[in-house]
Image (tube, rainbow, N blue to C red; front, side, top):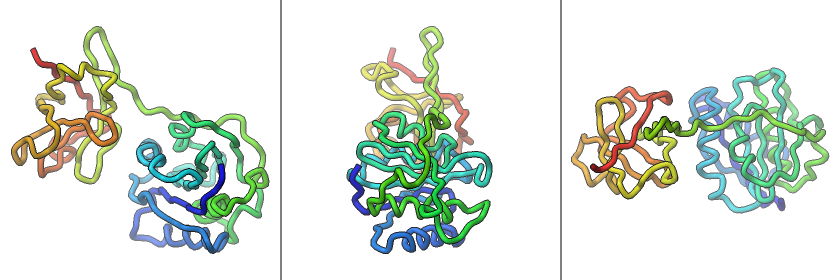
Length: 261
């Protein structure tokens, strides 16, 4: 991968504390010319699955040569390793807790390195803020084109994490939610390959049927609707409302397709 000087942050740090600013300061200290952008810092605290899902939705929208620093790290300061993973087109920096796995597992990995060299770390050290102390400086060095082999030893395997797949029992298919956006819309794990899309009429969740439509405006205000979202998943919503709050959906809520007779 040829670095393009761009560093992208994705964390669960939120925006009300100084953590994001300190990370960016560490990155700029390591490489004053780095271009820093954000995906989000509003991942639910400690949610590896949510952080991984958001990364998977948009990393490919960035140009080749981009470096991503992903810090959703409930195990900070423990045995888990700080990693750099280089693929053909992108570089990823973050904890070895599964948050990077769904993305890098489908890419061609060139290098997988445990960050150990002090030259790749920041000036400050702590047991609880590796985003500032390790990940941001390392990502900044990568964005500058520094040779990753200098960062530490190679790693043969990393912690795996996979999103739950739909379950088929006899002729019945059930799915579940992978993610809820800020509007309360729920993204299920159902893709077109899992369903008879020609006969699909909607989704049943509990006692409620969410009828299939192309977009929100095809139903009345306050009505439920399901639709094929921009990420390719079958999604549910309430027009001008919040489906997650109204129905108390969670990631464990099951969904079942409804077909035309």
